[in-house]
Amino acid sequence: MAEGIRTHRLKFPLCEADARSLRAGDQVILDGEIVVTAGLPTHQRLLGCLEGREPMPMALQGASLLHIGSYSREEQGRFEVLYINPTTSTRFNPHMPRLIEGLGLHAVGGKGGLDAASAQAMARTGCVYLSFLGGGATLHTQAIREVLEVGWPDMLTHYRLVRLRVEGLGPATVGIDALGRSLYDEQTAAAQDRRAEIMAGLARARMTALPPG
Image (cartoon, rainbow, N blue to C red; front, side):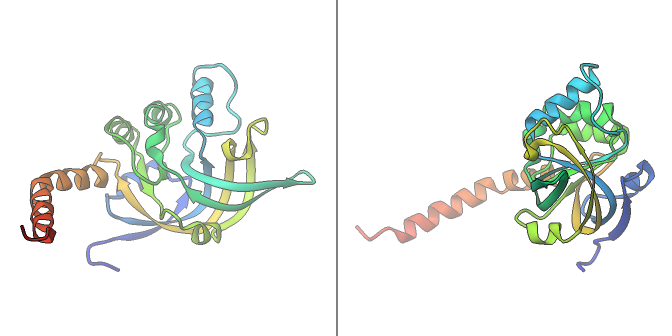
């Protein structure tokens, strides 16, 4: 373990106190219940629920809502998740501030981070963003213990809300903490600060590679 990195094994859905105790860069191993989906239509439909258009498909207040895609099948009335893998959270930026505050979420996650408006909502509710290993389907899937609940069976399986019981999922990195600190924003700023230096180095390399004359 790298020096200064803290690792926590926590029960989910994550409570506000645990969320507020985490700091950007911490590692988290998840045990308990998570709700996963990878669908834009799902997020739009959830916003409709908050606006009173239809009931929520399951209890989601205080849930740990993760942007994780799944490959599933239904056989003889049994819904089975064959594998899970994180999807890019930035696709959901327009929806997340309202969902975070409207559902009182304390943990969201996926890969790629969320924008400043989402980070501000997270700071208000006491919520963290967990970054999962992209392409780590085998590792993530091994943590599934049980499908507990499936919401909106009228949607494609990829878009449904699925509540899973997991054990030892992760480690995931706290990419945005409940203080609003974002590792994504810091990395972007650091890259911008070095842009001129990098571009100059590339220009020198090109000149060196050109044939004489």
